[in-house]
Image (cartoon, rainbow, N blue to C red; front, top):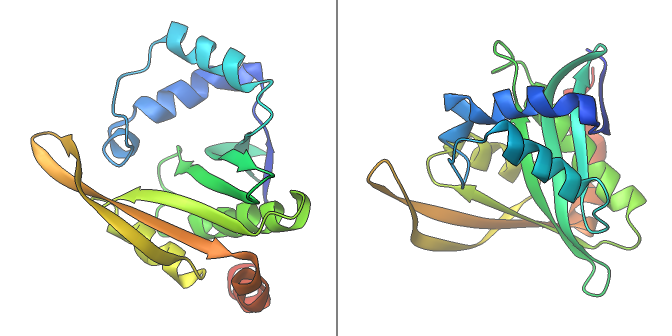
Length: 181
């Protein structure tokens, strides 16, 4: 696998819309609103010049397979939010691709964004596999907002997690060896 990130382009937005509207992604997203073409175009026009966010298409061997983003980049408090990571193409579950993307995003943030010291992340309780995965990267749970969201008449908790740059620097070589063999 040759996995890398590239910036989102206008030509990507319909594929992103289809992925985001798929049931497997909508069920674990905080917003499960169906996204129209017009909404997607408006989203792209808003993010294309955003100064406090990065938006990537995940590529695997020159094929787009997912989306990742970092938002709320705060150069005063030296924090940001790992906002999205999803695999849009079916058949990638359990392949390790999600973990590779997680690695690439975290490593990019801590090595390329001026002095960022902490990455925050919010994950719904109906996505336990992702919570388990990011804990392996060194994220710690900083809190839980109980019954924060209701989806399909089910109360869902919102897990607040974070990783610090020093923790990442201590873990990244071991993780890199495991993920990129």
